[in-house]
Image (cartoon, helix red, strand yellow):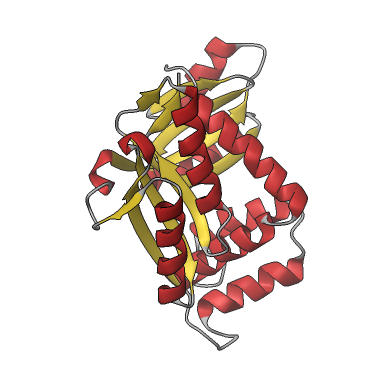
Length: 240
């Protein structure tokens, strides 16, 4: 069991603030659209879509918005075709960054991401230049009980590959294909699952001690996260 990531906590807090501003609906809608495009519009037959819809409902996203996002992904609404694009780049101090986007205008999205890098001390990289530093994993968070040893045993039995301490939560890593199965196993064991997502997890973490450099990286990550077409961002950066 490893220690928690301070950057991970900061990002989750920022995400909560986004929810208060309503910006989270755009991101959730894009996630739903991509999941529907890749696996069809029936959540019962598409685990990725079921996860995206469940997350949207947890954030009180209206059902009409969810339905429109599904139809946007399946092409039932017409208009531009939604596609998923992954960009890679380097931030201040050479930190590795991956940016998952959902867009109906590839040129617009590329320009926005490139501008964010250029204006904030980073630069975009060729496909594959950064990706090899990450593994595709399922990431599940569940609330701690009063018995941490029991929590760990239940998580292992549920299929967890690794487990991390994140203050009031446990963070479980799974094989990407087993995300939904492990999540259901954890719920069946009576554990309170907080979130479940597919993620790019850094193989090694780059710790930055200098506060000014930390702020530069955080600023770039904030600007990228605020772009309308960005679904999620991943980095190997952490705070000392």
